[in-house]
Length: 285
Image 1 (cartoon, rainbow, N blue to C red):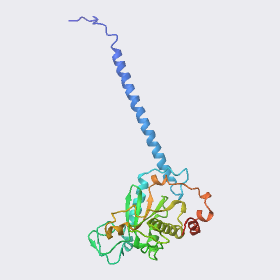
Image 2: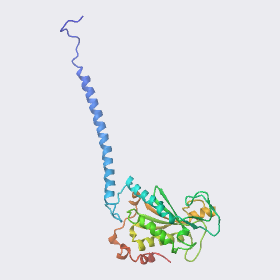
Image 3: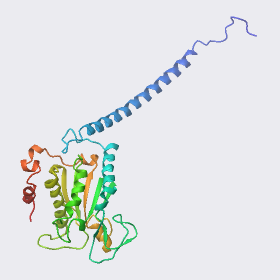
Image 4: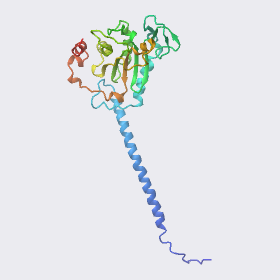
């Protein structure tokens, strides 16, 4: 039994163990804080970019300070709201069937019509959300006669409805013309490239001249038969492929579109007037 005051060994260095533990904990703490600070900086930068895009979204032609809009949830949600309105019952009168060919009696099973239908018609348009943004597929017969690029009178009613829904959005718009694989050869349209491009240009021209779309935010592309929705192996599939797609790009994609300073455009083009003259200068027909 040890007596009081009796010294048991030399324990003068035991404090070093506590000190070493404290230093280790402090080191781990500062490493964690450093890692968290780096993550927070990235998140803050992303949030700042998205807020900047929201506050500057009213401009139809984004400039250098407003191009970094990001791909936030609010941006995608805005396009989804437009898609829902286009598919709402108020647009039901426009979703009636249009003929896709003379007495073909085709059973339709595509997204353009009700599953199981069996006739030679399909809905005028359908709506799709994908990685590019909001895509409005408009079938050929709702806009044009076969092999032609002049819009039919009834096409204006449909395009007016669509234009009213998308005119105020800041997103870049692509109007894309598509055909089936059947060849065309005429003086005006030597191939499906020219036909599809002319149809897309006709829709762009109508949006600009009749609805005041800013020319710098809308473009026309012709893909011919090379971007089909379905194989061109049946009359039904060829009817699906003959279409005009109106694509509202997401903000993340819109930021990479070529930006134009309106001050550098001719007055009549920048203001949306006399668009026909500007197009005719570029068109060989």
